[in-house]
Image 1: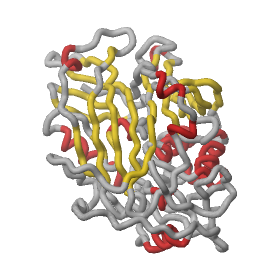
Image 2 (image 1 turned 180 degrees about the vertical axis):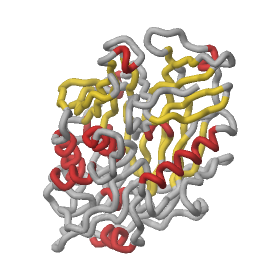
Image 3 (image 1 turned 90 degrees about the vertical axis):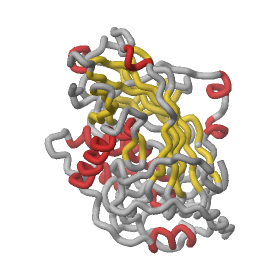
Length: 410
């Protein structure tokens, strides 16, 4: 890790782990805010879909439910499919003060409660842009535009689902206790064994520990950018989770083929699709294995996403009518000044151990990183090179953490 990013990691205040009760409080806040009216929702750092939450309409009011997956059919374009991995997922070298922009298309399940009390379902689709501070010292920005919904497999598209919704714009709070910024991620373990241990840090409670570890891995890679060494470690760590199977040639919703690591949960095969060269997350896919458990015909697609691009930008777009993000105890006020100029220090290999980040990220990054030195990852294709390099220029997603697990409530 170069000195500049090591300073950011070391300089961040120590914070206690982001515990389950804190996550529960964040979810409750979302539920309360949802009753203000139906719109494209979000939860803290990411949209609801990125948290594995289903949008539920009850009498026209949005309510969030955990774990109801849904997915779109592929909408590939020749331009996207024909580009090489290096073109749509270049090795980036972001600098402090810059922002990482990730664009993605998503599709998940939405459940609506009609006036007569009968529930209806459809596949809820969005296009997302999320800007996140490279060093975690500034708020980011989340932009969500609704796409044409699709009917739930085997059902008609509900009338309520046809209603157009206005674009959703929200600041993304930079919370010390929920970090998923580049400077934090670049200091995570580059060793697969230690990375896998992080996936098991949270108490699974009544859930299966391996299932929760798979969810934690998905949360780590969705709408984030990790250095190559950390991406390699994540891929190998996921493969080592019991019940995970590897499949070649699985397509994301943009039609790009990759290597999928999947695990059956709640009657659905949940797959994380990675680019075979860069190990960057291409997207996710949910395919029904058990019709009764998933509530859809076997073989039907109930979740499908694509992280379309990842880029580095110097500043946020200027927008009006942007919602606040109250997920932190004290929400930082968006800075209106120009971000500090990028430092151009030449990356230097780190002679000593790298201090790992202090806290887990929002959705929920593993708890506090282990206090062992980790091999710093560089932005070059060699995962064993020196520590985190500084970013350069010019990528995205929102995929759910847990797939269909909770039953929709009317």
